[in-house]
Image (cartoon, rainbow, N blue to C red):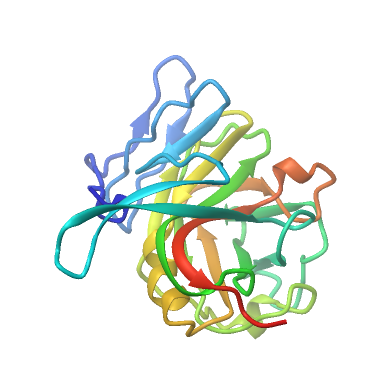
Length: 249
């Protein structure tokens, strides 16, 4: 089955008390909480589906006659310092003119003010005329005692990392969540399936980048940004595809 059509599980939208840790996950007014997968040995929590950071692999797809065939795939990881351009920033409702685009962390959640984390990934490294088989957003959470549901929404307007503010951003994102995941206590890594957000835009070349908002209705969560000194902790977008032609230089 194509991973894009993996079923999303849900449980009741009541506040959950996690046994043993004494941590509470706030009820999510946007929908029922989803169960997070247990971390693998490498600490990665895969949400909805699992992806390997291999150079390439294979994908089972339908050909023009509707027959199932195997296609070799190529994978690329877009991350600042390794491949492609990545931009990120935090904006604050209570400080609408403040920009936080040059610090090593990203924040989202509620304290005395609401804040959102913004991310943008350059897609120009991807060839034209490709078919996306999977795409995952990678995030690293700094130490945190909070268990939250993080909503990922698609940004709909351009913004600048070192200039964007709450006021200038104008809540330019789709209200519906394209994905969501449950955070864990402590330091954790997450890979979240965002395939659907890329398919139409990349395959039709309708946009040169894709942007995401991280949003939660709970207490603040903190993630490492592209300014962090450890490259392996920076946000990334891992994309696998087949077909395509590289753009001319």
